[in-house]
Length: 117
Image 1: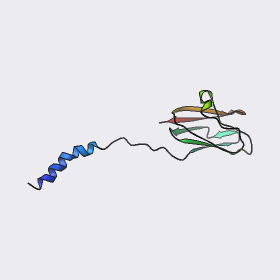
Image 2 (image 1 turned 45 degrees about the horizontal axis):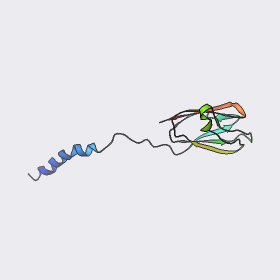
Image 3 (image 1 turned 30 degrees about the horizontal axis):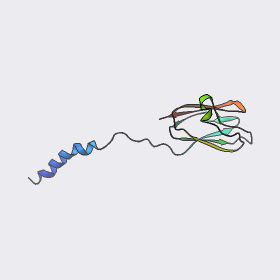
Image 4 (image 1 turned 135 degrees about the vertical axis):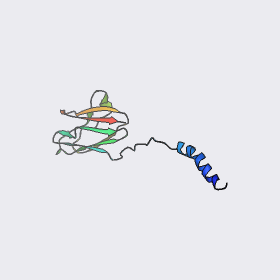
């Protein structure tokens, strides 16, 4: 009889213990920023996809040519760097969607960031 007690307890507690688990796994946001290089009068890469909560870093490397990162339309207030010839600009995307941008003095320079959950 004493040998059956542990077996009965194990069978009785199994559903309770397995119900405490979760199949949903949190997807960690990649902490390293995604890099966009500004060089040769272009954003490279010009289109990127990131996770919500991820940071994008634009790096100036165009031999002293002045550029900026300026959001298009509704994104104008979201993406707005200073006009500069060197350095970096960072933005962390906390909303999903597509964010298009351009360089103000060089409007043919365009890019986009697609933010997914």
